[in-house]
Length: 174
Image (cartoon, rainbow, N blue to C red; front, side, top):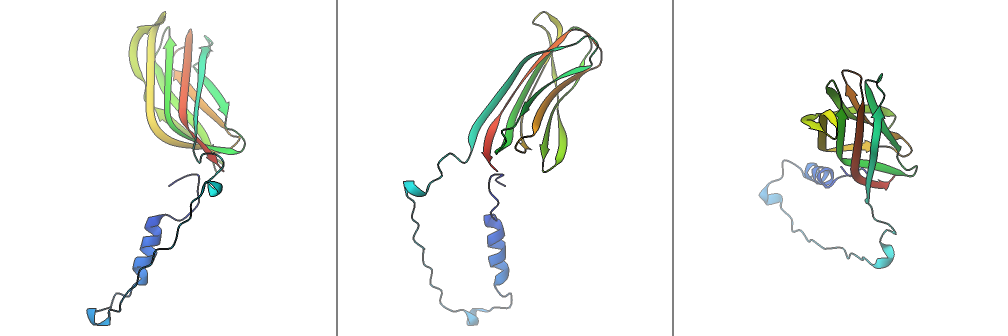
């Protein structure tokens, strides 16, 4: 379903048409059918002024974990007049001790706040830290206009740490 439009899908229209045909019809009841194509006029004047899907990407860099914190997060606000459709998320985290136990993305849609978990992969020592983790996920998440999108990295033990994340997708009129 296209989140930018609220029109019935072609499959619904086909289903309605199929059920409108009587089931007890026989070949003897057949009547000639005439099919006509309606003229379609498309001009540059009646096309939308902006694209239906405006590409979107965001990146948050180098958020430090405080030694007494068990995680860190990055946040951004969806533009007030557009719905965000997230299609890809990537997160990296570097820590001294402990294990990353969760990467997640949280969004709000129609008043419902939901958190979606992304599975991290351990990479080994990197960037001056004892442990590094990466997660990348192709997905489809939605966020309403003016809501906050949160990317979170949680861990088991405290200590020094850094995370960064990026998101790509598109904005559409709401």
